[in-house]
Length: 238
Image (tube, rainbow, N blue to C red; front, side, top):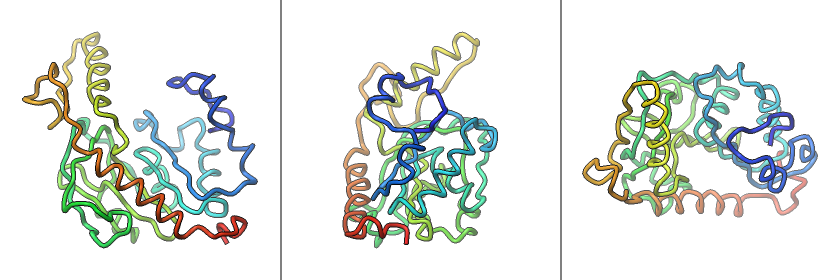
């Protein structure tokens, strides 16, 4: 965790019990690291209070971590830091379950994937396919509606996923209820998440249509780490 940042969405007791500050672990080496998302996508990266320390973490991964997974804002942050790929603010929130095309069926990260899959999406920003490919990065999963979803960065031993395979079945419902409560106070309306509630009825239980692909993706990532991490951990990053 960031050494100085105080989280507002997670109890301090939980952070103390399960996370260590970056400054305490920076001398150690790791086979894998996940840089998670954060609800701060409206801010420019350089305006984030812990941006300087996060850039240290991202640079540190190149010498101390064998494989890094950047999730949503975390992936956009890594794309910006390593490749200057910008994020663009959308006119309205991408919110719902969208079908994505498997663009790299031979990739070991997509082993077992079907030709397309459904992925939950919840974000106000995007990165654009032409700017990703101009940076020389292959897009593994993508959508004509939501843009790039899964991007590989071999030079930095990293994957970037901009959407949310990790969501539970009701995560989008909880986000909808939270945002609806906020917008009602402001006298506004929020639209339903796309392709999520049966018959677009928020009283009906949503079906989880992404769980199997989520297990495949993260299982494949862990398998690739297992297969390729040096037996001597001191050799990571060399």
